[in-house]
Image 1 (tube, helix red, strand yellow):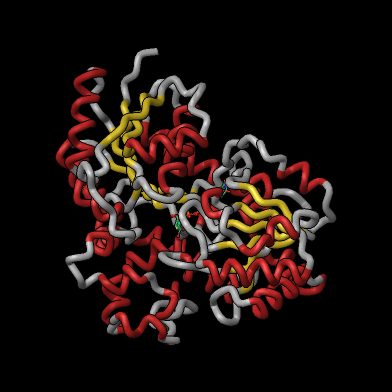
Image 2: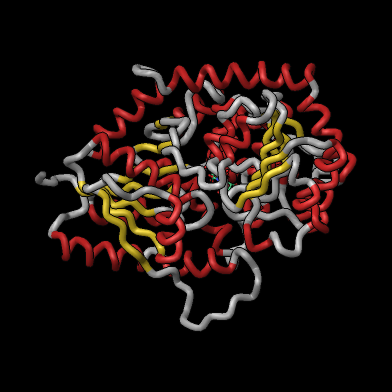
Length: 445
Ligand code: U2F
């Protein structure tokens, strides 16, 4: 089939960002078979993404490796942000170089840029190339709003690192009046420190997204109408196209058949996303709470840490629990046996929990996660935080009691049911997300 349009897609190669963009690219590629899609990602991230995702059946999608900016023989200091900063320093040259080679190899001029909103250089690159740019925001609408209002927030709160513990709310901003200063991401507080490339990159995001022809989110119009309306008034086009229907993953460890053997709403599913593992003392506290309460659990737990773990907890509790290195999460959260999701509040996990109708116990760590916890627990009442903010045995047992109790659990499930219904409507034929996705196809083709 002759290809006229050629979309270049650039992910931010960390956490769930690259997988989420590839899902979007594959969905668009299926809907627009005459468009060619080129997906540029670092070698390591491409390996990770494609080991978990099916790349067959997408003849019009090709992936390319780009430089990750890590010098040969580099010895890492142990600071997790270092790899991100090296990558940022290598941009946009690494993307531009490979893009030019691909155009040369294929003879296909790039007609469109679809990139992670973190990659603010895309606005200039698209302008230089004389082509449109669509930004993909992988977190929630309130987190995007935070970046749009960063100047105002900094002015009003006079933020410094010390205000991290402040209980002051952002009540001067109606769309964020329930958010506390202490919920703001650490990097957000360092916007004035130019020696921190990740902070600078985030600071650029809010300034640059209004230049995008459209901003695409894994969200739906009914989730937070006030925030969505405000974003719509500030951006050229806001396209909520979620919840994404994540392609079914293989269930190699038999999680779903294990869940089939349990009572409705009885199991705790535990996962801290694609990057995080809580510190050992918190893992121990969570394990002790599960063991003492005899809560059946299914734990997605990174394999390399299993060995030294938890004084034989997994062996001792194998009759009530199951531990796997990677779980088919969205299918698990859609299973009726799951009663609670113990989560770091990453946005994709939040959306999957809402779609599955499962209330959450929130233990956020960084970035937008504290904001998500605030919204889930205080505004929407579909989750609870931990009294001491971190896993301690007593407060974790208390949170399990609340969510798994009939009265509170049912109330939360009722609240979450309203969002679930709105999500289901959004992705139905003629629903808002379906229509937004059609607009996106029109734009890229
Ligand atoms: C960053 O979040 P993460 O990538 O750590 O977490 P999520 O946004 O929740 O996405 C995790 C995805 O990985 C899947 C899960 C989600 O789609 O279904 N998964 C799985 O399939 N099996 C497993 O065993 C474990 C996970 C960042 F840290 C957050 O703060 C942001 O909100 C987020 C989005 O920008 O990116």
